[in-house]
Length: 149
Image 1: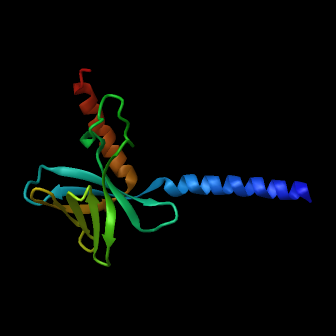
Image 2 (image 1 turned 120 degrees about the vertical axis):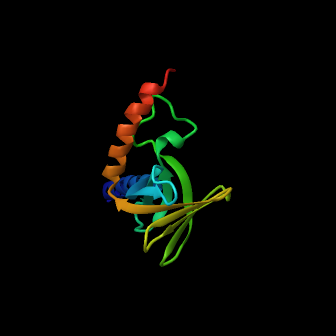
Image 3 (image 1 turned 90 degrees about the vertical axis):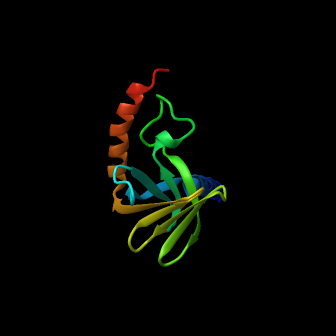
């Protein structure tokens, strides 16, 4: 009887530990390939991530070279956190970064607006996470070759 209790207790602790670990981890939901509305040559990629048990977005990330820690050792999946979901409606997702930058994604037409010192508007298309990582890998190879130190 004590042995069954001990095995059940240990199994419960392991399951709760794994759940706790994965509950904090973020998973790729979808990526967005965005083109600036006014300047066609400006293209940005964003990754929207979710928590394990949620179908709702939790945070938005941008390409790794926008990170303050970008260097030669930066990997393809080292995305830079850009904002955390602050509000969601049927038509919009709102992400905020330190209450300074507001990122809004229109869920119907996938337009993305960035409100900071001014407003930047992007037209986006939903892509698979693999497309984002492939695009990042191609650009990382070019950027790394330019880093001297």
